[in-house]
Length: 258
Ligand SMILES: [Mg+2]
Image 1 (cartoon, rainbow, N blue to C red):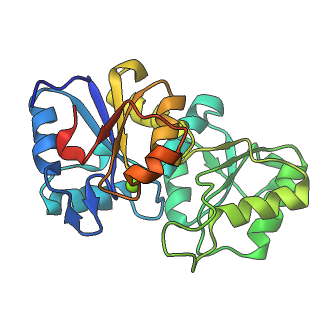
Image 2 (image 1 turned 180 degrees about the vertical axis):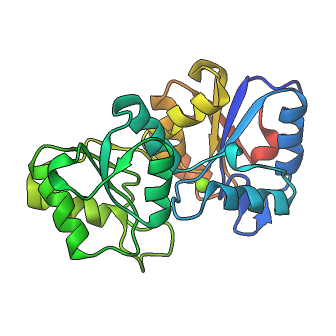
């Protein structure tokens, strides 16, 4: 394998680095090779309920040593975006205690006082109730900005048995006439913005590696990055042939990463 071609690498996890609980053959050697060449490596997850530390622990257990800072999830992407656009804002979040704690830690004031709210955030929330929805609705009617961590139609966390973010967004849009302004997680390029900031590498010198055309490859292209589609996950050569999306590289697996 020649020297690593890019300065920074952003890897999707499931279908790219591992499949369920098994590492994709060659993944460990690829990450070792890139790190040994002083290349920046981060991993992306769109699932906000599992913490970055938990993903890092899983990677480490599977043979790829990682710390929480090596992983970006949709919560991190949202915080990165809000820090750019609404630093220190008063935020009403439909989300679980962990998200509220992370927002507070990131310098935002979490509040339920509707007339003080500057930003409403919709996120996964297994403690969702009518009061939260109603307070968020009132804040949006009063003009608060409207962001979400995820826009997935089906919950990627539990196969749909918990309220997913898209349902919360749909409720708030339907009852306020407002539209969500930004969704931070995949397929939004904002999650890549957070990853690039972590890597401190320009988009043009970074490669996005993933197994999904409609998320990983699309957002990489949108962000101005070269892309590598791996065929070790959900996408087959037949699906690629039918798609209009043309990744820069098409790889059997991450083992062939340029
Ligand atoms: Mg994947």
